[in-house]
Length: 169
Figure 1 (cartoon, rainbow, N blue to C red):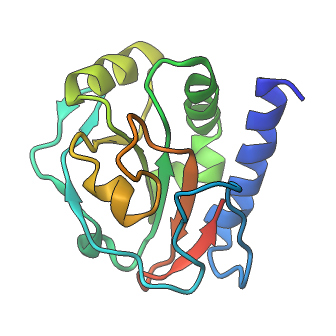
Figure 2 (cartoon, helix red, strand yellow):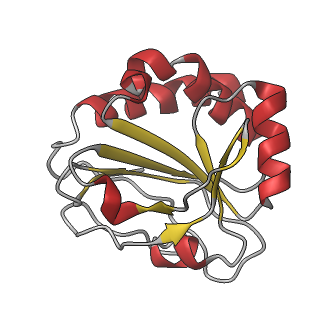
C-alpha cells in the first residue's frame, strides 16, 4: 500500500474519530513500545508552546483550557519527512470536513521539532492548524509517544469534550 493510500485510510479513520469522539472501545496501537494511553482514561494535562504559519502563539496551549471541545493530538516523527508531510497535508486538505474547520475541534500536530522548523513548514505547506514544539519530549512521554527516542512515534489521540481519551490509533 502506498504512503498516499495509507494516509488516505488514516484520514478516513480520523474523520470518524473526530466527529464521533464517543466511540467506545475503539483502539489500535503500534505493536512495539512505547505504550499509548487507553480509551476511557483521562487525558494528561500539559502545557506546550504552539505555533502556526503566523509564528509562535502568544499563549501556550494548555489542554485543560480546551474542555468542552474535541482535541486531536497527532504525534509525528519529524517535520518535512515524506510520511509526515503526507499525513499533515491530508489533515490540511480535509480540515474543513474532518475537523469542522476548527470549530469545537482543535488539531495539534506534536513533534520534537523546534518552533522555527514548525513555523517554516506550516508557512510553506499552508497548514491551518497548530503544531506543538515538544522539544523536551514531556508531552510525548506523557502520552506514550516517546520514551527518550530521537523522535515521537506516530500516535493519534482524540480527546472528547470532557477530557477523556475517546480514540487511539
